[in-house]
Image 1 (cartoon, helix red, strand yellow):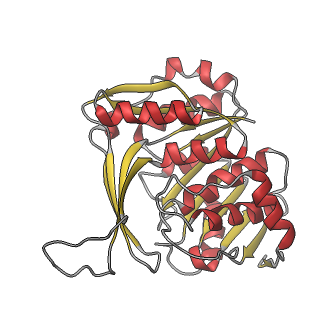
Image 2 (cartoon, one colour):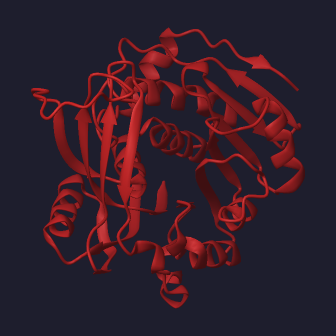
Length: 307
């Protein structure tokens, strides 16, 4: 499947800490606990989809600096098309992620001046013409992309991450454009199924998924007007949960785009995400499609229909 992914690409440093809250001490020595890699939501999605066998065109911005050069080298190594990476930021975005042994994390993301950018609408038709699906991350430069993708009749998928209000002003354009909508439960007031009903009444998406971490995920499909709760997939260990949502989103798009119905697609996506969090770093630990399929065949498929 040909997928256009548009979103943040940065250089991420992960730091293993003793626990939260962090107590003050002048120095610590977490041997092999400090690591740096190319990351960012756009890159995480693109790399996960490439690992699963999809063809990806990645749209993003970097600066003309060493971090930007590192990103281009990594994209070439991954076989991800970098022809649409624009290098006119004052500096490349970077992030730092603190994480503990319980899977909790605290993220510091320095976007530099990327929120001041907008993709040029007149240059989007070429890359979109060959795409079967558009994964548009909720970053400012994607607002023109939403309009062009809809005008061209493309399926639009977006993950708005933390969403506590269906009327959220920053995310409204993404919510209105999405055929496939993902978010997390981190700031949802009340029950997630009620939040899904509020989104259903307000926006036209065909599918909505709320990632619930250790509690699994909740799925809404407009076809049949149904809501399901899926328990989490089993994982042998949890090293770092950062990037779990990106893994869930990307792998769902892969399986759904290959023709699976939403429910079996999400079952496999949960396995993909569970396998990923056994590794450090948001862009590491992605499994091949055959590995996911083998675990899916061995596992039970307990699903609770709510509506």
